[in-house]
Length: 360
Image (cartoon, rainbow, N blue to C red; front, side):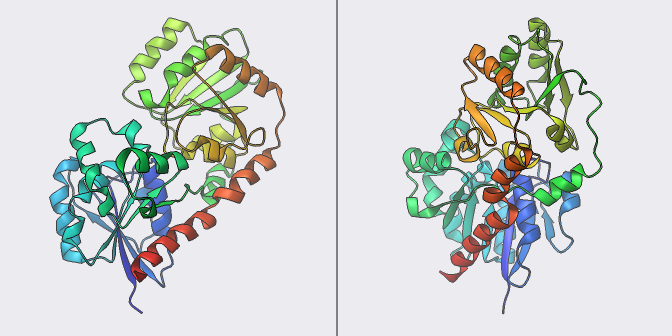
């Protein structure tokens, strides 16, 4: 039986959400049926170390996404894969225009955001006119799905919703033997937030919330790096927030999540936030801003977390206080995530989509 060849396309394998999902899928696809390859614009990033040795890497060595189109199309033409799986918003958009050139290859786009919130440049929006050329579009949340149908006229039957998986084995491996971070003060409650330091993640709102908790024994640990770092540090000083610590990017964020008293998601919008799944997989209760992007599909109220409006700074700060006084069942939190988003459940859905496409 001829194996189904699949080429996954990503910019690189830096440690982000899309990169981790594609690495997980490529690693775990059944080798009896599939032959996975990953095409990278740049062969770099932390997930290169986790990729199984039998996954071929095609490196087109291009800095800019818009310069990558010609080499990508060249590789597809040369290799004639059964399936091309594009896992990155901007590449998805550009590729849509050229799908008709390859009638024997099936194309899948995995969308990474609520597109109308995320794509603001007109020249990229234009390419979404061709999005129905994809044989399948994977949305991670109901919010993403309805956005594509309502704002981009994507045909409903083209879209399949598959939530993100969470890899418990990977997280448990990272937690093996890890101790409480030294920066967690012993007589304080420790709150953790993780994400790129950009407007989308809403850390400015979180700092305003914490300006109302200055006199409490609560530390806020923010993990991540990004272009708004300086602004946020200035804001921290301006608000006099001595209990807020910026840790930069951490190789092992799970250690922070496991020992945190609370995880906070402050985003303005999401695709389907992996970090919310990971907090739950570490047994940590979450308080999330009520924003688009599948939050309400992940949070089971009072089981693994709660949802509130972060722009009501006073109410959100009170909510933090209240949650920190409660006691939550760590195993119950883990099971709430495992029973819905474990790797095996989600990967079976991906495998089914790939198999169904080839049958057509």
